[in-house]
Figure 1 (cartoon, rainbow, N blue to C red):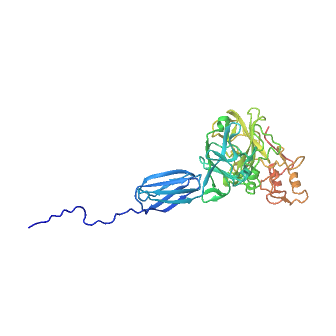
Figure 2 (figure 1 turned 90 degrees about the vertical axis):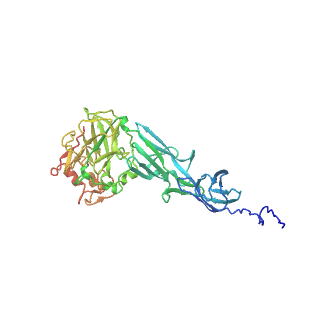
Figure 3 (figure 1 turned 45 degrees about the horizontal axis):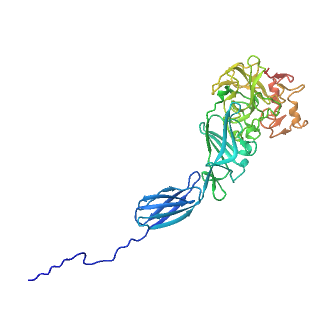
Length: 474
């Protein structure tokens, strides 16, 4: 038998060649932007052959993410200088897909502020009306500098103030603005921005780009105690304290307290401090025991010759009697070296009071001079009046001559009668900030409940109309 041998080489059947398909597709491509951050991209894509290269083109610049997996999702930061970005994805077989997206461009602006510290003024802030955008100095398009809102927050003490720059700040040369009063030591956020809010962010939309405002952050360790001596002061005004331990703040709550100290306009000359000291309106929004009752003058006098005023400055007295500096500091600083001094306090319609010798030091906390306490020795005789357990300044010196009189020449009663018209004793003058408003309720009245005339009579003794109460200051 003959056998046939067949040698088969290769497959018996040959099919068509398999050709790869370019099915790479970008399913989503979004640009996310928000105030305070750079825009960033989020990408989802399907199909194609790994690995993948992602190419982002913005403002003529190309950035890539190479050797990505089969379905890459992530964040990719792009330039904030452009408002459009083109994404191209290329797979291992050079298949591509392209998508272009636009986005809002956010320009992050930080106020350009100069922080200066010296022993004459303390820490001061000056804003030139412009902002820093990276290394560039720019002006906001959204509002004039004077109408910008500001907030100054001390994150060290968790306190802060805010308001309108054109109202609270003092304009200097050109478009520069100076925050009124020194700034205590601490860490701060200073925001200056238009009154436009977008969610939790402060922005101003005027087209492309969108202005996005961020705070200027600074710290200061400047301590006024390095420049002299310090003390804390407590006092009480009997005219504003009918009973209890808290004075009324009717002048503040009625919006009658001035933002500029009133004493230099009334003829008082400060020693070593500038006249016309002002406070931001936000200081008068504080309520409760720390609400402001009125302006006062604080004097530091020579201990052995107490008629000599060595330093004086305007200050504010709170309802609880604490006297604070115009900067809001609870410590009163003086440029005088540590030593023994007498501390005096004056008010526009009360008789002044002065402590006997008090030792002051450079300790930033300052020693407490409590003129409301009977245990604190004061100069003169019957220099204070007791309202319950609180020692107070005598009220009634409406004409500011250092005496309280009900009758006679230069008495304090007649000006009240003149102020209400001079003939109808029941007339009143309301909504007024005047030294003739003896009880500090915002109204000048001659008769009736809560009138100012009776306070004068009570101060001189209540029975002998021609008696005189003298201020115990040399």
